[in-house]
Every structure is written in structure tokens, then in C-alpha cells.
Length: 281
Image 1 (cartoon, rainbow, N blue to C red):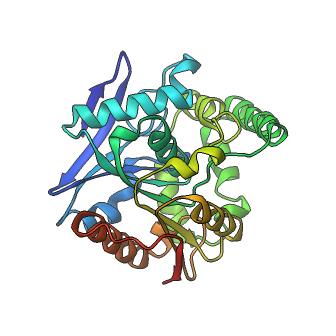
Image 2 (cartoon, rainbow, N blue to C red):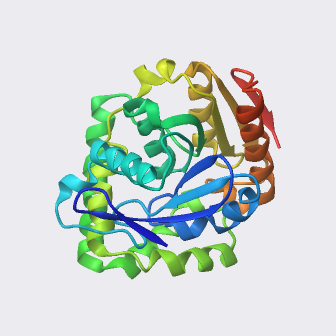
């Protein structure tokens, strides 16, 4: 565990392995600890830098909302990775982490050599959609503040998005989720939510690094979002993981890690990624 000061706020990094750096960004209510299997799979050939996003895990959960704004979060994450010794890396994000990784590529492209986006999106396309999502996320934030973390986690893990996860997996994830703080989760929704973030649909065509898009076959909403992104990104390949839902790297880790390792080898050896290719594994 390494806690780094990114400007009055400390972020926790878990660095392991050796080789080219791969930054790992978890989803909402998650933490760096949730990447354990991925760290093991990549660690013999790559250095993994798993980060607790602000308000999560062992990173700070400040009371000032400005620290959670997506732009500030992006700048702080890039600073944290540089403090760990890496100017440029592959950024691998899941769900909220995938949205964040894509924001890093758009805002701080000098820090990104490649992207792996699992169950991510460029945001919401219309102002009406964004406003509705901001209202929805504010209601969730107030629910957390009113009922506490444990009650919220019980609600959160039961939403349809996670219905494909086994009881064993949910029980394992719950241990990390309930360690979150009220302030951290509530402000994360307010500052980094899909409605609060800048929509990137018009900027996808300018992301000039290789991108791997990973979605679970059973997560049909994000399969379609992934296909839409793959059509626009200049250098994208997409993998649909059979029998998996939203958290494919946890539900079918071997399949996902095989795809990720193949992609990373291509990036670092020949950069021979087929634009727009869609395959199933």
C-alpha cells in the first residue's frame, strides 16, 4: 500500500509486478482490492497500479465536493501515477473506472498509451438525460446519507445490473463495499456520476490510442454502448465475453484476462489492433 499526496488529498495505490505499467480503476463502491485476480494474471509481465479512486477504499474521502469533480479526479489520478514513477501507461477501467479512464484519455492524453474499457460509456448524449441522471444520483446520495452504507450496499448489490453475479461473488464484494464511507460514496455520485461528467461522444474520434472494449454478453445495454463506441473510436477492438454480465472480469476472469493479455501483447509488440473488430470469447 502506498498513499500519495496529490495536493492535500491522499490516494492509495497498490503497485505489483514488473514490466510496462497498467493502471487499474475500479467501479463505484469498489476498491483496488477488487483487482486481485487481475493483478495476479498480469503481474508476471506487467506492472499493475491499482488505485482507490477518491472516496473509496483506503483513499481519502474529503468533505469538499470539488475534490470529486471528474476533471479534478482525472488530474489527481494522473498525478498519482506519475508519483508512482510512470509518465504514460495503459489505463484499464471497469464501469465508473472505465468512464474515468476514457476521461483521462480525453483530458490528459499524454498520460495514456492504450485503453481497456470494461462496461464503460462516454457519458450521456443529451442535456435532458444528464439532468435526469443528476437528479437520480442525488437521490441515491441522499439515501446513503440517510440510511448509511450497509443499507445502501444491500440495495445496490440487488439491482438488476448485478443479477448475473453468484451469491459467493456478491458476498466477497460486500466485504469491501461496506468499508466505504457515507461521504465518499455520496460525493462520488455527485461529482463523478454519469450525469455530472462531461459527455465525450464528440471526442471519441480523437482518441488516437489502441482501445479494447470489453463487455459481458448478458449486459445487453453495455454491449450496445460498446459497439457504438467501437464504431467511432479510430483504433478499437471489442470483445463480448460469453456468460458474463456487467463485471465480466469478476464473473469470468480467465476469459477476460486472456483477452486483455492478448491486447497488451499487441500494443507493446506490434500495435496491430484491428479497428472495429468484434469477437466473442
